Length: 384
Image (cartoon, helix red, strand yellow):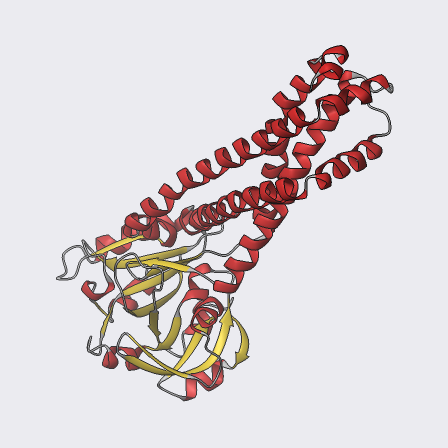
């Protein structure tokens, strides 16, 4: 058992600060690798949250069959009354969607036109951070912006902006536990139908809230069966399954970033291992002196391992912190086919990043530590 472990940590810090330039360059290299790793992990986590169905999901999306881009999905608004009659349906809301870009993009602006009197009933989870829903109801060209949407565009209550051929006035900023709500602009349905020239009585989709998640499959099949022989047949899926299918390009793009994360981990591992090896080679006589003073070989190995862990942790703290604040400040949103996914970091990513940095620092220093502990004292003292 290693005695006086805190003293070894202090000694390792002194050893690292003796070579400030080398240690600083190593920490900066590790920080860049961990920045990339944390960014990739945030994207992967955001993708999982947007596509993995859980027991709490009770939302279905009714879309035009064999259509993907919102501009091509056109359904009669009167379908709403028929959907409401299906057993297990808790709430239905017709939605007109207008986007500035139907393909995969980093800056998607999505307008959702909904009946003003139905929004609160359908989405009671909305929290108004500024402005008011009453003010939004009173003005036909008003918009309620999700907090990520507003942050990304630098908008606040009272501003006006124009996008995708639609000009609106910001009546409020909203927050929700539903990711899609934080990335869109809610406007009046009839206003958006006219502004987009879709025509009154025609919507892009219906969002259906079921009484329980166990009823989703049955309700979806009954909805599609009810309109199977109409001129506008439907395709109904859970909201997250709908996202996973329609945003396949986006999922492939984000999935590719996993290889970038693997590359970042490999780079950090090699960088720390190289730095610790240089430390061991440059401190042969010093390690021999420590052994003559009574430090056993095992303690020398632990000392070298601590230095590797400190380098990894220092770089990890800098890189993960920079990634966290950068992604929070920029509020990146990736969208496809009118659906959006926010790249928002959380404390889980921070903890995971620091744990990986610690593990990589320890792993990278194992071989140098073993090598330092195996050199005989006499050979070390004779080394030039």
